[in-house]
Each structure stands twice: as C-alpha cells, then as structure tokens.
Length: 98
Length: 371
View 1 (cartoon, each protein chain N blue to C red):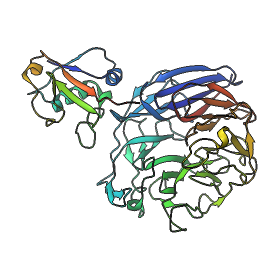
View 2: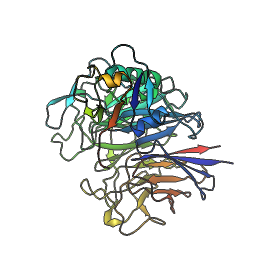
View 3: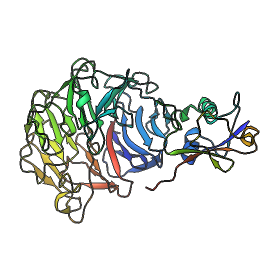
View 4: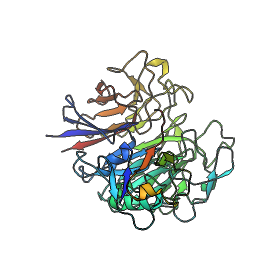
C-alpha cells in the first residue's frame, strides 16, 4: 500500500481529504503510482504528467523521505519506506506568486 | 418568469450571477474551481442547463468542466487535446520553426443544435470538436494544416484561437480568429479553411496585403444577418458585408480604435458595442474614463455610454471575451473588467450598474437568457 499526499487543488479535483492510499502493481515508481492514482481518480488525468509527453509537469515536484525525486527518471523505484507504507509519496505544486 | 444567468470566468475561478428579467437583484455564486484560471464559460443554446467551462493553471494543466444543472454542480470531463498526426511547426518569435504545443483552451462554443457537441479554440492555435459532451476531443486539423499554418506566429499573449462563431443560418459555415494569424472561414463544417483578411491593415506587417499575420482580437455578428461581421482588431474596428471576403474600417469617431471586446445588440443588427482602450502599450481606457461606445449605424458614428460607469481614475481593461448581450426585450449588455467588476445595462447600454465589484480579474462574460 502506497500513501500519497496531493496538493490542495488536486485533492479538490479528486474529492478527497487527507492522504490517499493506493495498491500499486509491481515495484512502485512515480509513474506507476500516478498510473494507479489516475485509474482511481480519472479527474486527475493529465494534471500531474503532461498528456503528450507523459513527463512530470514543470511546476509539479515529487518528494519522499525528505528527498526531492523530481529530477530522477519517472519510472525509477521509490524508496523502500514508501513501498512499505511507512512514508508518503508527496505530489507538490511548485511555489509561485500570483 | 424570464431571467438571465451571467457566466463569468476569472483569473481565480468562475462565478455564476443570476437575476430575474428586471436584472436589478442579483444572486452571486462561486467561486467555482477557486484558484484556477477560467478562460471561458458558456452554455448550450439548446439546453441552458448544459454549461461548459475551461479551467487551467500552469501547475496542473487543462481541465474541462461540465454542468448539467445550470451551473449548480460541475464534473470534469475530457481534457486531452491531441494535435492530429505529427504536429509540425509554426514560427516562433524569432522566426525559427517551433513545435505546436498545447497550452490551454481559450474559448468553448457549444453547438446551436446539439448540447453534446462543442467546439474548443486552443493555444497553440487549433480547433477541436467534441460530440460526446466534452468527454473526448478531436482536432479539425484542416485549419492548422492550411498552407499558411507553418507561417503563423504568436502575439505577445500567445498564439491562441479565441473566437469561434458558427453561422446561425448555415451550420457548415464556421468563423474563427487567431492571434496573431487572423480570421479564417470554413464552409464545410471545419474540414477546409481559407483566410478572410482582405482589407485588414496591420502596423508592423511589411506586406500591406498580407494574407495572414493580423492580430484580430474578436469578431461578432447578429444572428439575423450572419454575412455582416464586426471585428475589433489590435488597432481598427472593421466591418465585412460579405462574410469576411473583404473588410472596411468603421472606427469613425472613436477616441481610440484599439480594444478587445466587441458585440452586437440582440435585436438591432446595426447596433454595435466596443470598449476603446488607449493603445497597445496602455491597456486602459482613454483619459481614465470607462466608456462603452455604441454605434447604431453599423459603425462609423459612435456615441459614448457613460451613465453609471467610472469617469475618472479608471485604469482597467476589458478583455476580448468579456462582453455579452442577453435576448430580453430590453436588450441587456454586460461586460467584465480586469479590476473585477461586472457591469450590466438593462437598457441597451443607456445606463450601467455593477453586479459585482471585487471579483478577480475577469477573463470572460457570457449570458444565458432563460425562459
């Protein structure tokens, strides 16, 4: 079971509060976690990854275990603590003004 | 009892303003999609409870929301806008080829006959159609594939397809406008297109007869006479009497012929409204006076409409999709400003009152006339 923390805008779209818990087939990676997230919450399709490239949107970041995973390959394995459900996987909206 | 529903898109969400036919007391609901940019909200002419909204942010991309209960509740529908085939390139600001990249939906145009069919104008400029209530979108790629497409270039605001008009007398005829490529017309439901820019003259274009490259800001028509088009261009207010085959300038005595919004009275095909803006570098009203100008002669002769509008220290802008008219007997005219005001006139523009004063910057205003 993977725990996912979404930013406020995406929580509203998914109509959830708090963390989301997901079952992910195989070794979890940002890509497979987002696949599972989109399958459960179709409203999130295309909001985290660009639909054309399937890459992380430029103002979205991925954090886990106090590390920024954003620049690692999107299909790289997540830390064991995330895989075991001890730590959440964070989807973050990058800070910006306005 | 008859009434109106004003659909407002802003920089930070959508708002729905409701009133009865007197248009004196308003119920304001929203923000819907708070914190997101809502470029456009528009209802189906055949099913007023069906409303489409374009919601986006730079963070999380594009969403299309649909309401089936007149804007009380909303559900996201399809948000995938894949360009047809290999997208190819258009010109970038420096003249180099640049790949077509989807950014956002600027304008939604529901069908005049089918609530499940809607057109979407997007940036980078292209036209999409959904026939399943917004669940899926297909590009009408004959437009972008026009011979001139690879030469289109963005303006400062991006290369957006912002105006879509389906002829009320012939649904096969569609007009679109693109900044800064110009106006185009299809006579076969969007399969093939041709530029309709003859007679437009644009400062900065070295070729006086350039087929494309004109920064059209908006086009409007009256349903009873869809061959007569009115255009607010970057500079110049223009008119065509032959469905865009040729244009002539009707700016007349306007204090500035720069502007964005333009619309036509619901019952008087020759009565046109614009909001003059000082210049392309000063996007606020001349002399700090917010004035709608009305022509009752199809252009050339314009009168300022000021009653109820601020006549000093006003430095807001009125954007291209931020003006609309209702169909009540006394035609209502509405517009929104970048200062967050939405003004309404229940008497064809003779006098104005603010419905709301402090919304986020208004990007679009549409009106539904309800039976």
